[in-house]
Length: 423
Ligand SMILES: Cc1ncc(C[n+]2csc(CCOP(=O)(O)OP(=O)(O)O)c2C)c(N)n1
Ligand SMILES: [Mg+2]
Image 1 (cartoon, helix red, strand yellow):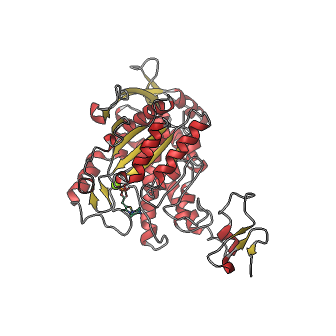
Image 2 (cartoon, rainbow, N blue to C red):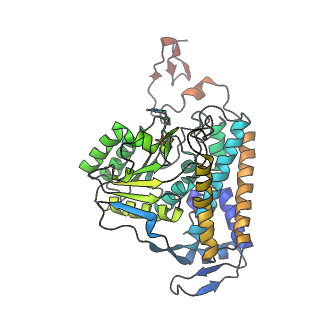
Image 3 (cartoon, protein in one colour):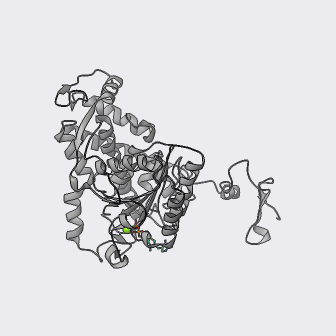
């Protein structure tokens, strides 16, 4: 199934037209896996409909996983729709282009303040999203732009938020670390603080008898926080459908995991909770592990700890060049050998899902889409200079209290009056 719901209308259009441009697509077909069917279509819709029906068989290396207290691991051989793979590729490229645009906009001083990019870690957002539905919940740290996009926000709204524009996902008031969208609970600036919140989201799924789960993401640095262990305890005590996901990108700011953590096998950190280490640089491994994890936690087995081994190519944030605490060779090595986008591209070509030229066309379409979104976000207006805009998102509209107390009585805001209560 093409995950149109996680794709903005503009991006979806770009993707569909690319499919048609490449109207001869070779795939292995579901019921005759060895057979190769060649498609020749005449319209966007036809190309998409046929493409949607086709599945390909994939095999990922046995080194993709390591289990802890688990009898079974995710299958290494599996089938998935060809269109899903293409969509994953496209989304990873869009996220990377979006982050690179954010980098450039920051350097042009159009984005100010904190800004943490996730270049190199794209496989995690994309792999997780493809394994879940919009009814599942996701919560993560400040390194959140990719998840905000993949959960449903157009690139324009993510970049608009970074530039403080009214069109931003948080109306320009949150900035880099505070982005939310349906089923996505941020974007949290305090290291580890999202983990108890995510545990609460999982509790809500259980309480409401829903067959849904929460992906509760945190970093290797955050993994040492006390509140993470308190969350483990409650989640196991109540067997909550919570997937604790440590994005181990090997560093917490400028401190390597081995210098900050007495035990760096983060997938074993749940002690009494089973765990799974996953190659987080391979979107297919992340996808498979996430499907496995969702299935595990919604089947009443209680929580699971996933460790996605990954790497950030850039510094911790825009103020960190990222080269003083690690060698250039280390970064280069990861980029050239383990890049998630290059890895999936290899699969697409090897499985005859797309040719080199077709992949280039996807890259070009993604670049064009992001460039257009940058222009729109840049041209979008900032919030109007009106005081009531400052207070409008404190409460869900209609649920406001009469007066929101300020620091001093002069600052108190009356929702009824639409102005300061005591002025
Ligand atoms: C409670 C708290 N302590 C310290 C900080 C400063 N700080 C911001 S990010 C960070 C490192 C976290 O590293 P990790 O959890 O590995 O996440 P990554 O940045 O690698 O994604 C620190 C110490 C903070 N924001 N909150
Ligand atoms: Mg880290």
